[in-house]
Length: 582
Ligand SMILES: Cc1ncc(C[n+]2csc(CCOP(=O)(O)OP(=O)(O)O)c2C)c(N)n1
Image (cartoon, rainbow, N blue to C red; front, side, top):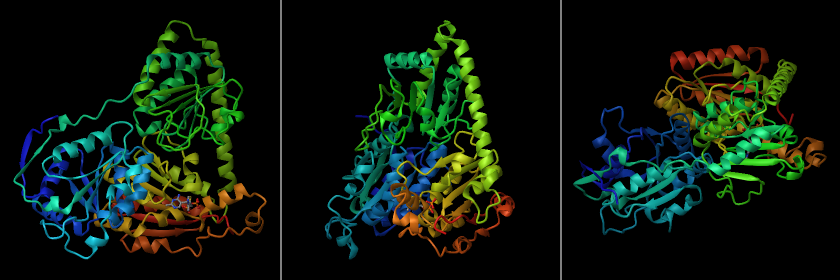
């Protein structure tokens, strides 16, 4: 057992808990949605808050999913886990969607909830209000247990250092993820004199897994011998430093790369980049190397691949144990974190090249062929944009192109534009410049994420790209309120197609000749009449405008971004797009 080594004077359990969170050293923000459980914490913050910019800053967020999304966005750009404070059972329930997203994206954060008081007059802090009986659950942690790495209800203030440091180490060890702590009000209110905290250097998470030598050698051998190899990745870019190792690997052996754009995993202007359509290229591959990809191809049948294809799958858990049903085959499932495994694989391959065992002519030929395919792909994309750029209502592809053109070297996009495929259209060459809806796809992430990104990267220009459905899921009033209150400027662009197009597409895909498709009547998918989203944003001090003319998009974006950059004020563009139901 490690011994805590610094004594901090406190007067309550709540002060002690805050002292422990401060001692972690990485928590800058507490995205807070408080309740009757938090009296001792509110008192403690009023009393112990310092002017130190490294102190934990409470940020009021009037919806819990938005608060979790802010911690998520902040982590995406800083790799530092933050704290989300929620009210007992109801706050935990409202946070759950964000937690499901964070779990799917391996985003660590501390979800901290008051625990409805347990005692009935025996202890200070016990039940005192009506709701304290009806908000009590048998097991509060059970609400989030499937989607957090670890949950714990504080049972005494004597071991807070051990509990909080354990929460940190578990959240930050791979596979990373959210953790949950519940704080009974009786313990928060308990009188204390001091608490002992760990020094930050006693908080090392467990080391990352590097693949074993035998697997690396076999992978190298297969990739070197391949005639028609393909790399596929989806979330390698969540560690932005891993991107250069992937580029190095691709260049060493002239390996074409496709990506599912959850993150920027590979520069889209790289001549070895072949876009986002996995199966188009995977069909003909003789060696497929999946790196950090949970759903390698769709539909999940091996029959659509070439006979005899060799499949390598590198992931921290290549069996995806957390997913109940997952049946993709791999001939070489390799356990390892890509950011530490790829450098080792690259070194092995470099040695073989130096030893002259790699056929250079084959690589040169493949490099040329892939570069030609890359150029053809760009021409095809440009042509499809050209074909729709004047359409009115605005085609989402044209909107995406205009957003891409408006990006500068500091722009970061939180993309929740769902079927608009923004990420397929814009050029993404900077690791960490775009974060897509988290893998679990629990909508309502985008606005909160954008705010968290801006807090974590204050010099960035941040854009939230939202479907009109996703925008409404995002608790927009709560997010615009928080952005106004703390002067967190970012631009929201709404792809307003007045529908849940994803639901329309799903129905059409299953029943292409069905009644819904034939009659263009898709019950339960229509979002018209569309609200004036401009007014929601304006109510919170934002600059907002509606755009209906395709030719006016570039100027509208430039104007809104100027407001964001120069006036440091949030902005919203409500862009009226092609309605799939019209
Ligand atoms: C919380 C939540 N509820 C419902 C869904 C199901 N869902 C997936 S996509 C989608 C439509 C989103 O609409 P919009 O943001 O307008 O994008 P579009 O599909 O029109 O491109 C819905 C409702 C979800 N993913 N998450």
